[in-house]
Length: 481
Image 1 (cartoon, rainbow, N blue to C red):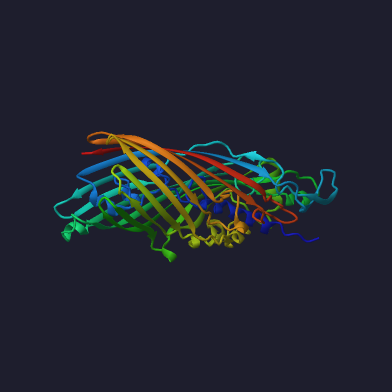
Image 2: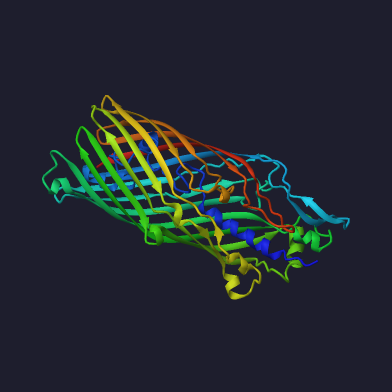
């Protein structure tokens, strides 16, 4: 019998890098939107209402309304609880041999052991500064935050270990902006507020990823002498890129406010292209080391090599309306959309394959089909300020998933998300402190071929129901100097 185990072994490596585009937090896909406590307390309703330095991110045109020099520093704590309920026995089988040398078909575990992801918290930061050059009718600002990021840690022996075990990704967006107060320049400030803004973004990102490699083909090839063979791949990499943002703000004082903010890059479809590159390290259990030697004629695993994969962060936009017709009360509605069509496939390259020193790994360069679509979010938030110093906030939102059912995987078992939020704070004469909490809930059902191997290296689909409950607590301190 002729067997070709190398192809599936190599293809499973590519799924490691698919994890680069995943998230365990709130916004659809792999975008984070928790970059200010007051906005978190209103479930993200912010495009027309962010009247503190966080406007640098949510709508930089608003900074033309901020007086003098203002600074804001904050952090968001995110604690996701992720559970996996296995679907049950699969009808798939793979060809193997027992230690006694008896060969035949054995059932594949495509989802039999329910478990929970490891509990691990994350803390994206936000830092903003604004300065209003009122005599010139312009304002400048700077923002530093983490709009894209994630972290997921599954137990080492769980059903989906050949798809994903560990992932943690951070992106740092450095964003200087300039806003022009058109209403002031046109002499309309008494009846209308109107401003435009534009900015440049420098992006730096890091990634840590780990997964198991299925080497059970060695059970058949060794006639049962090798059992339970597997390897592990770990990669730590980084990337840099550039982007832009534009914004518009208009308001009729005491009545309505409108905001529009757009962020993107210079790649196709307005995406920010992130060429992640770093060291990929391969290790093996004792049986896996024997399998590595046995399979060396078909595929060569290096101890280390450079790996590279390019991820396109999507063009996204947020627009909102706010009603301010009652003193001290603001009611806002926001609609957000991210154009994840830029994430249609994933392609991986190994340096050793280009050099010809690891035959067989070159097959991993074949693109992986993703075919994501847009994700939208609708948020409604309200703020009422008591005694001119004590804001009370409530919010609700719902977020759609950009991931088609046929490409959903355990690194991002995304579903329709429901958001409930509240917050408060205190406003002093030159300072303010805000705190916001949000609960995000969603569920996803995986019933597809992602993670499915072949009759020799069966891997495991980890099909079942994934439920996520994410607690999000943000704090922001603002000073006017």
